[in-house]
Amino acid sequence: MRKDYFTVKGLGESELIIQKSRFLTYVNRAESEQQAQAFIQEIKSQHKSANHNCSAYLIGEHDSIQKANDDGEPSGTAGVPILEVLKKQGLKDTVVVVTRYFGGIKLGSGGLIRAYGKATTEGLQASSIVERRLHLLMKVSVDYSWLGKVENEIRNSTYPLNRIDYAESVELFLYVPVLMVKYFFDWITEMTNGQANIKQHSQDFLEFDI
Image (tube, rainbow, N blue to C red; front, side, top):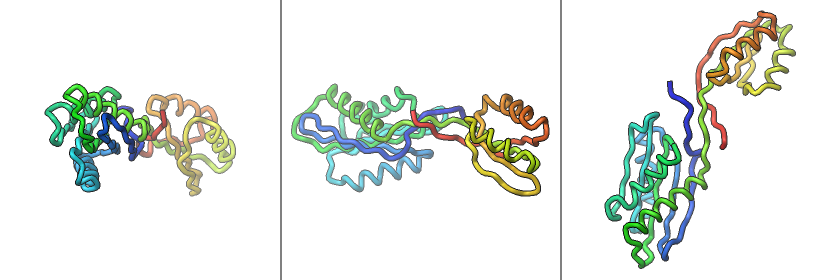
């Protein structure tokens, strides 16, 4: 079971000028290598006249897929610095493309490494970071006589209410953090004097801004 993890909220863009060179950073979430490659190609098509479109991505729970591309910059001065920023910030399922328009002044290997690292950091800030926390979607079935009390307690709790289905009995679906499941069962059971039927329906990740 995949654990909670950090990733980017979505598309982010930033621009950085260093020694007259323009560094345009594009960040996005990618949950497969195909998505990452498609995003890279999309940015490249937008900047065909750029000197370089350098990129890197990390995908998978254990970073099982990770690639870095210098796209013509000296080896190890662009793609790897981008990738290292992603690793340092502990991000998963993230792709970054840094487009460079050369300004006529050479930066040297050290200058390029710092420039691409800084450009990546600023791009991530523009995208914003979220934490995806694993939750179980629990189904609580109660008699209609309990609806008012149970719904009110849930809406005033920290458990996000997903929906309410009105069938033969009332079914309330809400998200519970994995580590809170036992406490949740005890809470509902005590609230309803044991009259509730509680079952796990599914599981999903919920996103929280940090």
